[in-house]
Image (cartoon, rainbow, N blue to C red; front, side, top):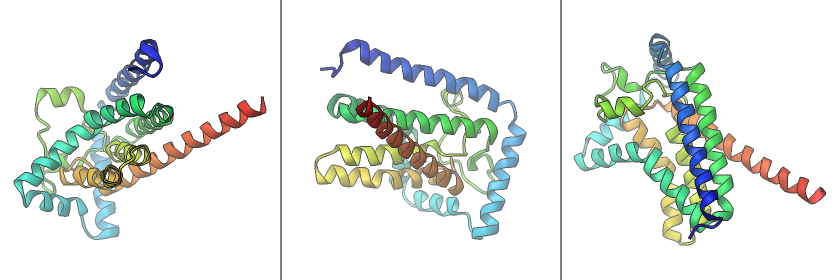
Length: 233
């Protein structure tokens, strides 16, 4: 069932666990300066109000709040898009489209490393930390959430970056029109959800999209360069 055997599969799990503990280490550094994160969050809000004269996050929240069912789906998407869906799609590509797995894995890892750099140097408080302007669309008060979530990881939005990478890779990997349509719409849906739950600003999403595109392009270029080097050798 495994394309390259159990040893290779365990190796992939090791890579992900290594990244997770690296994330925790960076989170420990970021969380020590909440004042800077609050200031950066206010700067993002001021920028949006100055240049757009509108907080699009509030509009997205009002749309989600119009229906309890929609709000539930939005919250579910936020909590599961970055872990459940990402892991499930990585597993699917590994098992069924293995020739595309390396690029997919590398793009996700590179995007997340770029995101960690952003969290370390530009810690930013998310919208839900400003209750006078935004409403917390999901529950951030539980012990489990506080254990696994980085409270100041707004800029860039890795939800936006990873959703874009997943959408592009799965669009290419799937063979049926309906599944291609689903994954083509997936990134935009996740972008809406992170705004509607007050977890990211529009600028966070834009930065996340840029991170995702840079990661995909870099991995594609390195892969092509490696192939040319092998042929030349």
